[in-house]
Length: 303
Ligand code: HSE
Image (cartoon, rainbow, N blue to C red):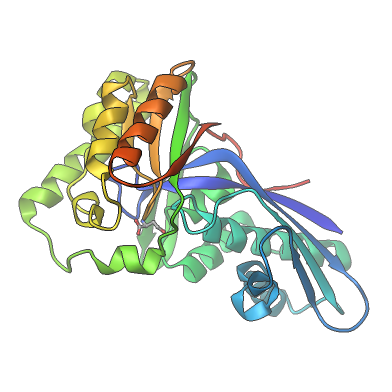
């Protein structure tokens, strides 16, 4: 049996649409086992029937890609999932499932065959192909803050350790939002001025994180490429971001495609920011749960 633990992730971080991401200490744990008998079985704690069907289950689907690639498959696969990452809330639940399926299946095959099979780069390329963009799967796999780029289809990335003393608070609305819908409201083309606005901030953000200039984060996490368009799917988004900043957050942004909002705070500063975000969502008619969460230095791990 293999057990894999994969962190939640928050993509974009404001200006870094489809590029930047960070891993969070909130986990899905997946076990995989060859049963030796009959059909594959999927068990998902607390998530009803739908996810236990292979056609709906990304862990199973990702695992099949590995088995095809390495030329080995278990005789009867049991997958057990404990899901700690809220689903369809912009916290990387589908990326975590994909990474868990790839890493778990590779570990299972390696044990069965007694040799090393897929390396991290190959697993990342498979994860990006399944997910479509690299900004969640990269930190889910390698942890920390990541910058990811597709170069002729090949993922390239750099990882930075989370700066000491920086933590997160996520405000997670009750109502889910499908990524496909949140991408559907984005324009095909954008104004050059908006592209430059984001380019300058995304690059400033990476340099600020790399050099520890956390004072630059409020300006460096502003965005004009996706958040303004997604506000109609996440009522109060702008107000929640401003409320978090006014309450002392270093940064606040839509988490991935939303609807969650992530704020980055100095250690010990979570409480007022959490309260401010919850109140602002409430004011705009959304109930949300607020969760202080640490930034995860490590990505997926086989336990
Ligand atoms: N960069 C993606 C988006 C993340 O914002 O649509 C969601 O998967």
